[in-house]
Length: 315
Image (cartoon, rainbow, N blue to C red):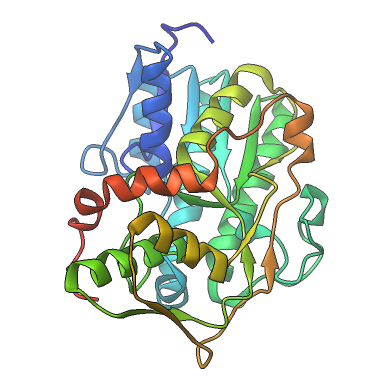
């Protein structure tokens, strides 16, 4: 992939897409094709096919998706499956028709069975029931992954997928109603310091463990794979390390300088006890994450005011 190659980043304004754009620009790629939702409705098949015929991108990073937390996933189940299937189908098929050289599809670790053995290996896909609350989103992501595999197998398209673990970083979602655990905790500590609160309440016992990957590391992995990977098999992308929610809260408390108490509300659900990806396959290819969790959260905390100010100030 030369530095003048035409590259389409679908979903470039989201957390993942914007990180991929930053990485590409940093590495000197100058011919990026970007479209906002107002300029190109990816749910419209004809519009997507016309776009590909006109622009003729050589490489595609498919990071566009309708996303949200547990509440949004469970409330708008029809929208999550319909819109994500539409976006994926239209882009992947148009990429095939226009002879795109390579396409990378962004999946999600939620595609794995709810009670998958730990750490989760790629081959555990479709071996058990999904988590019900985000099942429509997960099914759409599985369909995208399988579509890339099928186009690779039948048409010899260089299309493949990655399944990232829990992500955090610039352009994250800090809305307390539908954000994920790490940005939600950062928001809680930010509001507590701002308001002079004496304590921060954490949902659950704090015992469950989760894995977190900085989105800039994911972007680094995506470019690494776009340059070097040519198999149809999907790959996990993560750190291979996890941390309890209690220890995560303690780490954010340390970084933020909050001096109050942590209160664990055990009337709230804990969720899955552990969710850790097996990343031995991508490690064997020569890629490993660079940003450790404490450094990553510290970088986010420095910009917390700017990031969180995009959302309502109400806790």
